[in-house]
Image 1: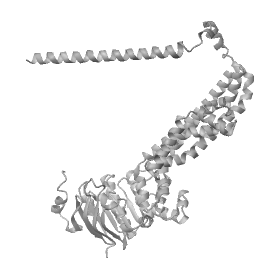
Image 2: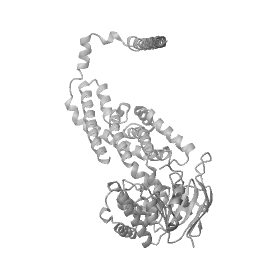
Image 3: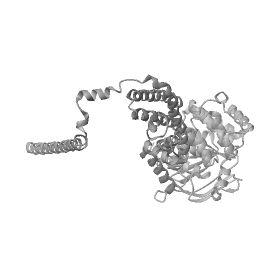
Length: 272
Length: 250
């Protein structure tokens, strides 16, 4: 009797295992077909195979970038500085614009939740889902070429991340200090200043420095759409087919970003 | 003449939850060190928070120095709260601020909002803070951050902060529950001395019956939101204690 039960259980287990195997195989097959189809329509059909030429000509084309135009470096100092300034001012402006978004976007301090909270969340999503290049295109159209549209684009792009992390930090604070300030007769602003701010300030500073570091990368390419900085030089070198010059600009961007990363690392370490 | 009179106090957190305080009445005199004892969940913390309306009572009356607390507007309530010092189980300090700033924050009800936003406390407040810190034995720790102190020291900061308010009533919510037995006794002794020096009545939640019997002159025994005992400490005995704690499995 017991043997019979064991036997039928084993049959059932085996059946369900082979069923799972069949299902897996089907999924893999579908995935494979999807990938193959994507390659066919986007790469095979869409590439101009005639123009690529032979393997050696590909190497030759790519090889033109393997040189550095040293004469360009003195001319890169000013745009590099501009890129850095765009990142700094953009981040600063972003933080200032952030403050109301943080206030509205933290569920526990938002002034009128049914309206202000969704509004702030919308701002955060909008800021992050629009690419910095798109923001820059928008501001170049609005205020013209130069560093200013870059600064505005960086600021708008920064709001989302800084505000989201900061608002969540406010939602996660330890409520005990808040209770204490309320118990001694403190008003809303005093609760904000004495119980909430000391708890979240390190987070806000940390995330702002992190965002600043990312903004250096962003501002380095904004020149491609006319918003100043190294990107503009990059664009010009590309247009005049000066490939060693392009490499020089890329190197300059790399150095700038490395400096930013080192500064960001140590300054964030010191606030936490 | 009682300075705090509580009549038929009722409290519940929402309509779907059971009532926490069920028509509670008692009164505190000017020289009382008044203990509220009872098992966990009896409503001790809710009771003490109803006095300064950190928890909004659903019914009854709280008279404090002839003020009907439950009828105050929010700005009147803030003005009243600045005279009610509160000391908490977990100290409720701002960890990332200095001891001095924590103590000075006891003056928040007195300095203007704008001044307080820039931490611009008048010289007299700083002098007072130093005197009080000296009194509670923390004069050497003025510039330390609150989270650098030990539990007992942190509670002394809490005491100092409450004293900065020039309190006319001290509310203590389990002031010793986060401390070890020896420090607990020291802290209770300090609070008792200070209450005498500053002539301020004390209402104190405490689940440690021994400490209550030792330091308090009156005891209110709570069980499930109902008053089981209300009288001088001398009249409390083991049988009544057993009754109050009957529902708690020890």
